[in-house]
Structure formats: C-alpha cells, structure tokens
Image (cartoon, rainbow, N blue to C red; front, top):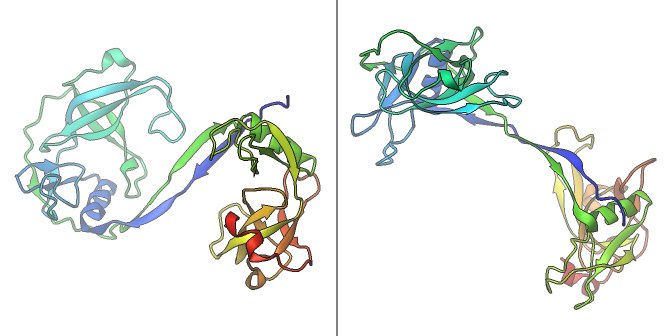
Length: 315
C-alpha cells in the first residue's frame, strides 16, 4: 500500500473593516493610553465598548473613560504560548474588570507562574512602547500592589487627533493535513502523470478524486480505475481578484472538468485560451510542468465540443 501523505497547510485571510464612532474612539484611545467604555441603557459601563446594547440591541454612543487598573475576575494559565500571542513566555489569560467598568476585558497577564495568579488580584495595564491604535497597544497586564481603586467613569467625547478609522484583522490557521489512503493513492498517481479514481462496487460510479467511500451508497471504494487524461468543461467561473502568493494574472478561468471515464467533476484552471472563449462542453487536457506533482492547468485539445447530454449529469 502506498504511503499515506501528510503536509503542513496554512489558511490565511486578513480582512479590513471600518470601525464606526465607538470602536474608532476605543482603539484611538488605546493609542493615547486612555481606556474608553460605553454606557449601556441600564447604566452599566461596558468595556471593551460595544456598538449596540447587549441586552436591548439599541445603538450605544455615550462614551466614558475608565481606569487602567482593575481586578481579575477569572483566569487560565497558558504554559505554551503560540505564535502571535501577546507574550512569548508562559502567561495567564485573565478577565479584568477595570476600575469604573461593569464588564471584564480579556487580555494576558505577565506573571512568573500560576501560583502568582488568583481571582481578585489587582492588576494594571502595561502599555506597549509603540502604539498604533489596536488592542495590542495594551502589551499585557501586570500585578498591581496598590489598593483597589474607587475610580468612577467620567464622560468622554471620544474625539482625538488623527483617529483610527479602520482595522485589519489577521485570521490564520496552521494545521497538518492527512488526505487518507484513497487520496494518497490518487496523489501518488498524479506524481506519475496518471489520474486514478475509485469505483463504487454498488452503483459502479467512478469518483475522482476518490474519497474512500461512495457518497451515494455509503460503501467503501477500493477498485482503482485510471481515467482521462482528457475531459470536458462542465461549468466554470472567471476569477478577477488576484490571490496572494499566486503568480497568475487575472482574469483567469477556474472550471469543473469531467475527465473521461469519471462520474465526478474535479476543479482545475483553464489555460491556453482567452478567458472569454472558455465554454461549457470544451474538451481539455492536462498540462504538466517539469517535476510537477499535479497538472498546472488544462488546455483545449482542439476536439469538437462535447454534446451537452454527455455531461449534463456532472454539472
């Protein structure tokens, strides 16, 4: 049996959003070493501020300034910090109710060990040396030996010079993908410029790429069947947004291709033809790059277009 493959994969999608008056004031305030909250309809002070009342959903605009010290309401120790977390050494995740606030703020507490952390302990903000208008302007919290404060929230206009108006939020997932035995066999075959599917012993459909089981009958598929290499475009889309780290000029076409002998269409890019000439029924073949483990793209074969009835069940 072929070796089961594994590979490290990263899914990353940074996105930018406009902040609106409440969150703009909060993040700009952090840049200026000022912590702002918002007063809810029942009089509570919510920190971090929300744009809408968490109880009534009414829009909130009354900003107030709270203290930079507070009390730990609960915590959890993090012995192995991950990339991108606030501290590189072990720390505690804490919920801190800042003086003058009625809700708690989640952040990191720099402490020598879990024995140094307790619910009810006093902490204060450690400000970042360079602040840009982000939650990371609070580098972390640190223990505060001072007495509990009686700070009362004071009204704040929320106005600052050069306010922060947008936020770019990175979203990233690092993981190891194991395709399983069926797809490992499929990938090993592709490395030899062959495309292999698996046949269902019940309905006799051939699935490419194989999943190890028939999605219709629910039985294991073990019989390998070589398909293609040519196939038919069943449907397609024109891509007009350039992807990060993908050296392909837009616009380009991404299509469903039903390989000859397969009963499931796979996805691939279409090349060798202007994007506006790609069509349903177009006959295509794979193009391999030197040392490529899978087809770089599919190009027209020059054959007449396939009849619609021959691929309509695969759209």
